[in-house]
Image 1 (tube, rainbow, N blue to C red):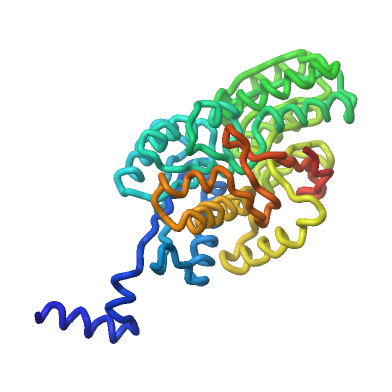
Image 2 (cartoon, rainbow, N blue to C red; image 1 turned 90 degrees about the vertical axis):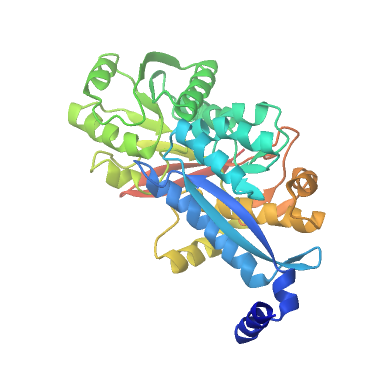
Length: 379
């Protein structure tokens, strides 16, 4: 009796009734990205997008099945390492999260997806683009951005048809993402009439590219395509400049960040770099994304790096599916998530039979005066 009286007094002091306390349900949303290592700035950007969504939902005061819901973010760091990714995935399963947003990289998303699938936990990746992720037959695997086939294909066609380059060199970092987007680029570029005159490989931790760039320079390419992330692309651009390798530089969403210019140490010239973000809003949706970016900057004191808006939408979609199913149980809300048509800050989102976003957009950028400059939004 004394314990119960103490709890009741405590709740009254907090402004809560015993009934409210008993009815509130906790919903755990896991988020995984690289919070340490070379691309920690991108992982933190993704996590911030998730935190923003969680805070908005908790402010709204959402109720499901007659009970007020409190959403809690459960963040984990996979360091962009596949082995660490499976370890933290199992940790989230053991923590009984209601859903997972992540991972950032294809190389971590794919191995982790089996663990979530075996546990029956829905997973939405806001940035993993390797097609294999959604081709494994997992009903709970979704992504909210275009895949490598769309991304690499669009870049390959743009290089051959718009830039009119004929001789191309390709470098990839041997990750699931880097190799995948480079392969798709090569396929599309060759189909459009370009020739791959040299192909080289590095890794996602490399900093010295003198040997492979010297070999590439001898083949006199008009364009160098890199499949990898900005932390490697920046030093690569700087060393291209030092070697006098004057070629266009192209890459996918992994390099397409505001940080690329500073990471290159002044090694890029205006218009030299062309990259594509696996997403993007058309003119009718520009106000929503601009408002999001402003709110993000106000909340965190920094600008959006890359995929925070897609993380935000992924969290909101998961919560919306729970409300439509009137349940936070993964098995109950998963069917609603699969058929959801959601209008987010990144535009209209719905999934196909594989879990890929339908009609995924791509945004092509270049850089001028060290800043990203949009070329076009395409599909």
